[in-house]
Amino acid sequence: MMEFLVFGEDWGRHPSSSQHIMSQLMHAYPVTWVNSIGLRQPRLNYRDIMRMKEKLFAKFTAAKPNTPSTVNTTENHQQADRQPTQIIQPLVWPLAQHTGLKLLNRLSLQRQLPEKRYQRIIWTALPSAIDLFSICESDLVIYYCGDDFSALAGVDHQATAAAEQRLMFRADLVFACSPMLQAKLQQLNPSNPVILLPHGVSLSQFATPQPAPANIHLQQTSIGFYGSIDQWLDQELLKELAIQRPLINFYLLGPINTDISTLADTNNIHLLPAQPHKQLARYLQHWDMAILPFKNTPQIQACNPLKLREYLAAGCPTISSDFPATQPYRSAIQTATTTEQWLQAIDHYSHWGQTERQHYQTRTRQLIETETWQVRAKEVTDRISHQLKHKVS
Picture 1 (spheres, rainbow, N blue to C red):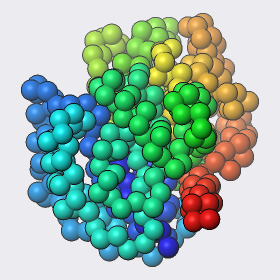
Picture 2: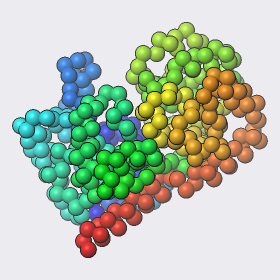
Picture 3: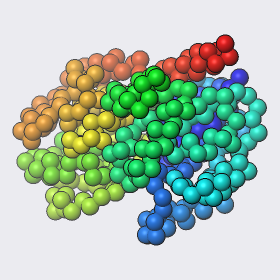
Picture 4: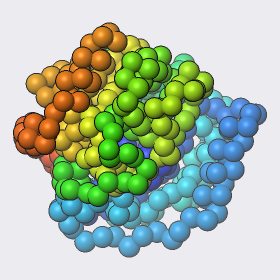
């Protein structure tokens, strides 16, 4: 029997790959989830002060540990309805450099950790967690890399890179979500094989028909994107596309984390609030097409966006910027590198009727049917079982 101790982002804050995988595993194994310990030392600014207040509020209003769930492998059981056995709200100083602060961090977390009952697997998506491993009584350490932290905004790059370097020599198993990240990590420690573990998809969640949301216009052609409205989104491209196709509505669904003045005064660009993950299929199934309009940056070159497979699971015709993660899906999506190519792809999908869309849905779902989160979780447990046997022998 195994138990998992997970260091990730705040549970429920956004549906990361780690959350999806653990949502599959937690019906067979106890999972203790440690909310974000951060990748940047706090500063005295409004954003960081509000974040600290949020963490303190979560700490002192946290619910009691959940009762372990019974095993349920039905994919229709939504990720949002699943909860870890215990969620820990840690009071630690992110990326502490001083010996005293590191000690205080360990003492603070140690008081919150549950008693070890089974073979304990540490799963960390944050390199900064390495300074806490000494109190965790682990039998196996897994590093899951889902981002290029050297290119990620809002990260202390130097300290995070140093932590990641140490983690590559400490981890028993290393997973990376994209070939580019896999190659980058392999250079840090050539003797520790890095395993490619692409993102998965909740196929039935996005394929099951849903009613249209009230805040989109069904009588006009619609193009949609959901996710963070951040600096990697190509706003100039979006504005030009909207100007060139004024009768098409462009919907951007998600939190705004950057200056969006470029999109101002463009009447057919609609900014909608973020929605719970289980509501996203309602939009995808009723948009005429979905887009990934990313800038060409190191972060995007290394990314493997969850939403790409979700677009395909919903059978929504997809147009994307050209980056490596799109390569396996080129038979089903259109990539564009110029404004003219984007407009040609938009015009192509705009003329589709119901028959073309149904054929597309069948094709895309067949393309990703072996890429569900259930499949990814099975790949993880198979690797863990093999590694544990190897360690014992």
